[in-house]
Image 1 (cartoon, rainbow, N blue to C red):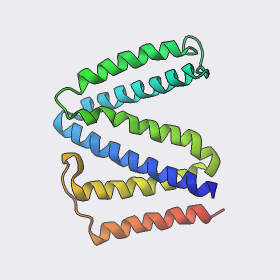
Image 2: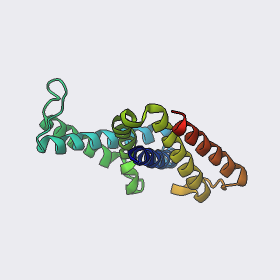
Image 3: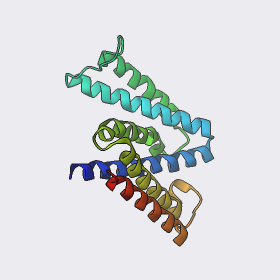
Image 4: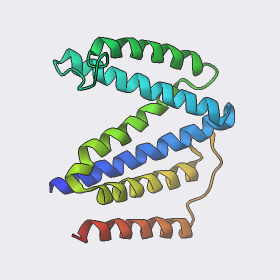
Length: 172
């Protein structure tokens, strides 16, 4: 049962990755891929720094070499990255500021779930979620992107990926 929960979490991480990709595509169209990447990275850095601050306040200091072994350093990084993000996202819809947080879901998901269910099954779940989310986002033209209908062939391709993930799940 626990494997099923980790697999479902991996699929959710995949949907997050598809959301990030759709948002980056939209920002890349409005600004450029370089600015979209910058905004994504600033949000990811601010997000992980904030997570480390919260963990530090809770008594779990980062297990990194000095000076990164103190959560106060990450508080400064979070502030600088947050300011950079706020300035960089001007002229875009404000929700684009969270784009990099989806990368955190992916990276933290690997750290938590992959050791429990294996890298292959984790990535199979991520792929199912990512492709499912991407097909849905394309179908709706999410975030102002071009519409690509969820044709029967696309849905069949999605089903093929699901079958592949099931095979990976029960291959042990």
